[in-house]
Image 1: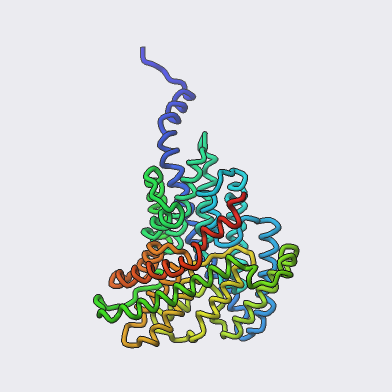
Image 2: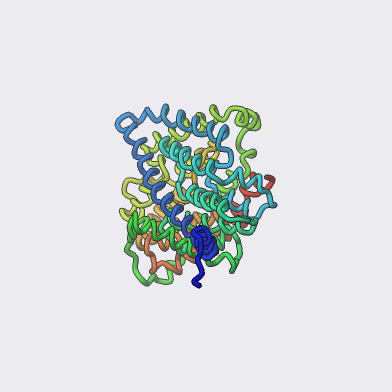
Length: 437
């Protein structure tokens, strides 16, 4: 007689057959798609937020003295009150979870739905205030949080699995934010893990691929800064501006790291208790200073700096003043220490582009776009001390195949110069604020 199966038995058989592939592939791939969607829409919302701020102050630049302090104060207070753990770029939080002492309570405080909502909403509020903040670091944090939430679908979520999901989500977030898949892989290896883990390799790469496919489908196959024209060959004398760029950007990046890591050396001691007690007032004060700098530079320092960097790459310095990198550097410091969510990637690239404008005026016989791109790599490598990631990010952003050797050389030299004075910024911030739980 034929064997008859009850419907419930058939369902159990199907569930048992597909359970393992779903746990192994379905959950990570679903998470990667969600990370890609978050990266694309966060990019659109960030652009809209800055555009809204610029519309508010169009023809009434003095309004920034009211809007920027108000929104900064509100975002700083809400971060401290309801969304603790979402402050800053988010990359130090990921490093702390991957390399810090095992602490599930800390991980729940640094990742999850609460962090996703706070990172997106308060980050957009900071951008609508005109602060010098980027979206790429927050996208990394959001990607990690999305993957972290998916641990709930595993019957036994081990610590190793949590770290694997955090790593994959972070790399997918960076890849989706910049449309730079190779940089996403290198970022995970060089910045987050500091080693190559074979067992996480498959999940890591497939997450980047699926996030990239979503970005490709919704935003198209674009270059972040557009195609730049550079010669395929440079004379040997081009080594001189490369070396000068590396020294300049290495020192400037080291100064930025030291400024953030040793705030007690330049902020008066009497302000620290006030800062701890009154995030509302502290945020308003930082916002007011950022607004004053913005007015003094005719609005050049507001926002992430993407437009200024693109002008320097494409239009060779038109509409960007000589003092831009210094003022942008100062605005970036003030925006970051305000204490709300916001990243450093785009502002760092913009500051580096400003230094590249200096070098292109000193060496006018060489293509300005090439020198701007070299300094973008140099400054980012100095801040992060992840030279390979910095080099590949910029190369993928501009399709700069002809600049491979100069970009790589500048990244390596700048990173080493900065390393003489300061540790890698993200790792140092993780140890300072999150390793203790």
